Amino acid sequence: MTIKDIAKESGYAVGTVSRVLNNQPGVSEEARKKVMEIVKKYDFRLNNNAKLLKQQHNYGVAIIVKGTKNMLFAALVETLQKLVTENGYACFIYYIGEDDHEVEQAIQICRERQPMGILFLGSNKENFRDKFEFVDVPCVMVTNSAEGLDFKNLSSVTVDDKEAAEQAIHYLSSLGHKTIGILGGEMQHSNPAKARYEGCMKAFQEEELFFDEATQFASSYFTMEGGYRATKELLEKNPNITALFAMSDVTALGAIRAIRDKGLRVPEDISVVGYDGIEMGQYIVPKLTTIQQPGTIIAERCVEILLRCIEDEKPAVREKIAFSLVVGESVKKTS
Image (cartoon, rainbow, N blue to C red):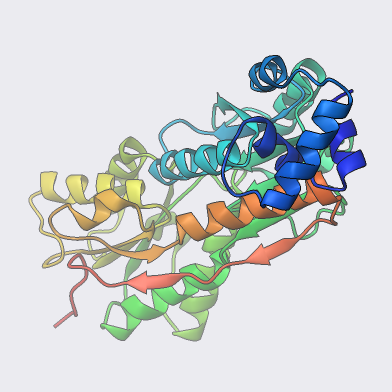
């Protein structure tokens, strides 16, 4: 007799049975009574099993985090872990490098720990096209879109990165900025970075703004160090830049430091717009203007979708969540 057997006989989901066995809230008295009747019927050892349940490799959710310095991911991981454990599942987290192959990591995890589902933070679609067919558990891409990937066990929850970046450029243009620099991610490894770049290009075209990639774009990882280096590179190439759009808030923080170290001011000399809406951005001086991704809502939807796929065998879902432009103090209208 296993927890899946109890779920099958009781008619309740595995997660509901788990919450009963672990004496957790969020379960109706009717469900609790039914599950406990089956436990008694088969002399199921509740205490030992509840303890074992948290240790079993094949009764958990894996979270694979690509990159170790992404502050948005740090906040998301904390929320995801809390939601997963509240629903009675064990949770194990794996951090890998920006250039590592997340699907190969998932295949290894499935082989060694047999999770019931996987959440991916930070993804390269090409890696999924190559090898995801060997992952046979429900999965969700967090803050990245699975559109164009024809896998029945792969869901996604994200904002529209292309539209969001487009809005950031339109906003800067509306304030009179004509020479705008872009601090981007490594587009060969990051689909969100690629989509944000495409959104910028669309906005430049619609606003009829000149754009020279050689002097107005610098790639970097989504880190403060990357933003600092990329900003120094751009300002040396193009001293006429009056505004920067950074594809992540941490990149924007590095950019602000680089601008200050050059003897310039934000926003008086150069305006800066970030992307993500991390908490730190609202406490720095000047307060960061940014495209905000609603992290809590994204995390909640990802876990809801994953557990529905695990417990009720629901089909994959590709969902987009609304973003917002949060105006802070780091942008100024040009004179």
